[in-house]
Image (cartoon, rainbow, N blue to C red; front, side):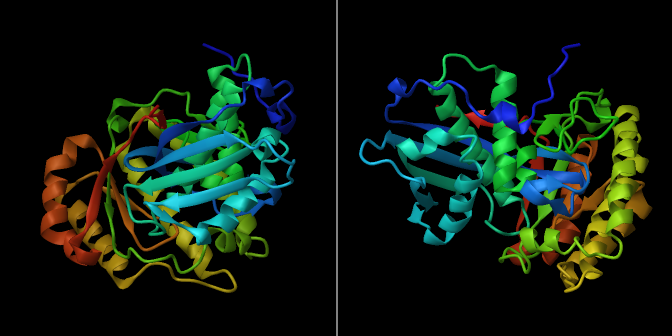
Length: 369
């Protein structure tokens, strides 16, 4: 088995770049969202997670981002010059987040201020709807930046390329570091997960039972509007949370349990752990101060229907939730047809405009040029 090298922040500061290679061009990356099975909620300084998380990389829910660049040949600058377009329209309201991102990665990507950038991005799913658009968006941008960096250096291993891309993505949006690779990704240093790090996501290298191959994720779009509370604000509420310490410890223990479940193929244990994690995430929000209820009435109706269906059919369907009202239905591919009928007959009525997305576990990001 190949032994991976744990990298530090210092390793991501480039030592030798050939700026004579500066030229104009573009890189386009298609990068998926992800859905956490064991959730991360709460972070330290510099986007470091308070606990380890593990996620399925998705496939149908993705962002395509093109990073267009040309050398900036006049006076030197302190800031990166860029324009951002989302789905064909200039988006000034996206600029502050990306400006912050560029400031955070300046030490690791000093060459960026030598270019002018145009960023063109589009999603296959509704923006800010509780599907992790920042995860796919920031990882796509990080991968474009790494493609540019690779063009300025004489050699760079694939392992370094993807680890640094995940490292950079994390500085834009924590969960983005889990969208670089697939199918199962771990973020956060955990003593039972080889190569795991707080600095970047890594592919789960242990055996995964065939029960979890081509796992399905049907996303019920209960509410496609803007989230009630930003993820950043939500994470910050964990700093003085009365249950934070116990929650972080629980998550670490659940990573160990999930590792065992993925190996054994125990679908009933998977259902129990995934739903417990989803409800714990929302319990943390409901017991913080200020407090939030991000689920909607139809979220609860869907959960009740899932529980009724599972009791009646002995199905292995389960739900999980991100920091929003939408419901992710997770189930093995062997149950795809009956669950599709269940969604059409009983669940889509609780979705906004009857809309839902059929997704499945995917392979990670792809370069399109």
